[in-house]
Image (cartoon, rainbow, N blue to C red; front, side):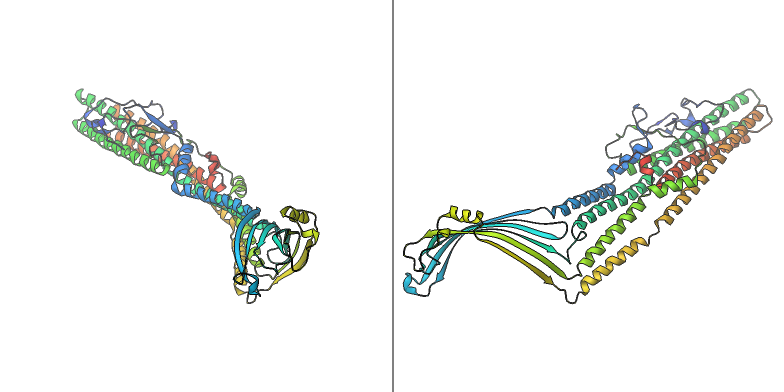
Amino acid sequence: MGVFRPAGVLVYLGLASDAFAQPGKTPPAPPPPSPAAANTIKLPGVTTGKETRLTLAEAVRSALAHNPDVVRARLDTKIAEVEIKKQRGAFDPVLKAEGFARREGTYVIDSTLTANGVNDTDLVGVDSSITGRTTFGGTYSINFSANRTADRGDPAFFVRLVPQFDNVLFARYTQALRRDAGFTPNRGLIDRAQLQADLLSAEQRERLEQFALKVVGAYWDLVVRHQRVSISEANLQDAIKLRDFVERQVRAGRGAQSDVTQADLTVAERQQALDTAVLAVIEGERALLDVTFLRQGAIPWDERLTLVDLPATEPVKKNFDQELKVALDKRPEFRRQQRAIEVARINEDIAENQTRIRFDVYGEAGVVGFSGTNAAGSMIGTPPPLVLGGIGKSFSNMIGFNAPFFEVGVQLEIPIGNRERSAAARQASLAVEKERAIDIRSLVIHDVRAAFQRLATASHRLEIATGSVKLAVQNVTAQESRYRNGAGILFDVTRAQEQLAAAQAAAALAAAEQEVALMQLEAARGTLLAKLGVTK
């Protein structure tokens, strides 16, 4: 936090509201340096005039934006969102293409027909296909292949077509009727990815609210520490004024020298109390900067951190039934459980699908185009005109449906000893029952009741503490009047002032505890992040 420089008494931050100030008195200005106050510690940055104003909502948003655990949780959610696109991509068609050239040799029956008894053949071709799957378990493919074969001297080669062109265009569709059929094993994969993303989002919101409560606690703790500085400083001012009065009384011959000694001791004690309160503010500020990650260059060392929000000075009353109604509608746990059950149910259906017999039907249809250049001296005879010609002829034969073909069939697969898949299906079924067994409603009711009781207790403490401050103020006024009139003693005055300071500190703490309890109730309702303006 930098180097602390001794100087005059400082009220670091005037956060004390009217409820904590002494009635009938204006906030005291810093007094001139005196021997008793010469070692007062000032917080860093107070001489520069710079300050960073911070609201509770800003503190929470900063914490949630920079906390590594929160950042990782958000990345998990983004990964889950990408998984949705990945599952959708499984149904995108795929284009495949392959071109090739091959030379191969085959032995001929009569070695005298060739120089070395081996016939060479050159083959050049292209194979391509578009394949994909449907969301109801079907697979499809559209295939095309074109080949050119050049024979190198085999007299038994077909009808001596050199070269030969062979083209095929066909489509095939296979529909699963048992295993992998229907909505769940196919489109259900996308829905599961979507549900898992929603589940992570709900879980992340729960973690964000828990972390936000830590920031809330640190923020209001620092507010209380600041108010204790103000209270300690005001208490010190009263001691200094009282000492000056005692000194005047002694010089006038109307007071005892022992009262001067006691007054000086009181000033010294209260100066120490102020120094302790200032150091407590520094520690509280460090804790808040750590939890909000504002320490990482967001706030220069020589700037003063000013907390903007002040606690309410009056007790807050809430209606339990209304708070519970909101909680039953807003708590993210309900959405999390619902999504978890739906994911478990889809997993159960997918696992049960794997135990089924596979029974598919398929159909295939296509056309063939064939042609080639006739070689003179064919041993088999002259080819029909339909197959004579170059590559253009083979395509025209194919397009003209001169040689169509059709095929239908069935495919059957029966698992034997299906214990592994059956066990996986049973595990998935138990996972559904496990998610359903969680009693979220009772948990929410318990959380709201506990938060409501904490708020009621804090509000009651604030009410009592506020009343105690009023009584303490009256006591201070009475004791000071008695002492000035010679009917009281200095000890009673200083004790009354200390009781007032203690009552003000208790009221400040009670007010901050009520603010924390209010945020805990917001968390129990599931509305804390919305209350603090956190949208993600």
